Image 1 (tube, helix red, strand yellow):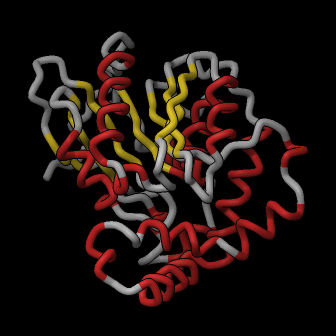
Image 2 (cartoon, one colour; image 1 turned 90 degrees about the horizontal axis):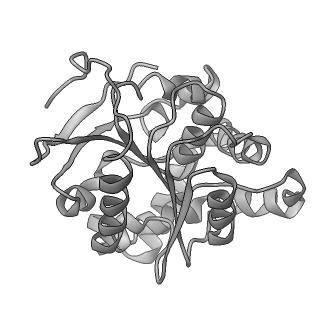
Length: 263
């Protein structure tokens, strides 16, 4: 995977918390714009365009293991903020020891506590209504000016760009979440869920936090799958408070980050 983190915002602190922002499936880094505005000044914010944004080249879903690919971009960061599909991949990276665990915010992560919690109706829901997740994102930002019909068409187009192979990658990651051994994920993890999320259930987020040795749980009311777009100030406050506290007390990486590209 050829992906290089890019600096979004410098820290105002002499002791910055170098934080990597990871978008989800079918998303771009624009989803973090409001968070960058409201985030605590101590956080040095970076982002990276991951292959599974899904709109330029669908071949991302045909090849390499995505967890291994994700692990390549994590070196040198004190903390990570990951959304949705990528939050599940990050959890896999830490659980499998592909990269050392660091304090992270797992936002709207897909998780089930046991394999028996998946049944045929689960597959039906996520297959037939997959586009509705993208329709949620289009209700915010510039796309909010469009009609509901226009947003629905765009959501279906995005689903088609991700394609069946991309959906299978997504659902396979979801299935694997129920088999992960989380006992060695020792860094503090904030599982942030939303009460009105139609995709990643808040009850599963709570179960994930309970399964993590250093797990914490927070739930945003009146919010769906994209809290950084829907409730940016509340979202930023929760994330900033956690990362400033957890990452500040955690032993930081010593990895040289000179190889990372700056804007």
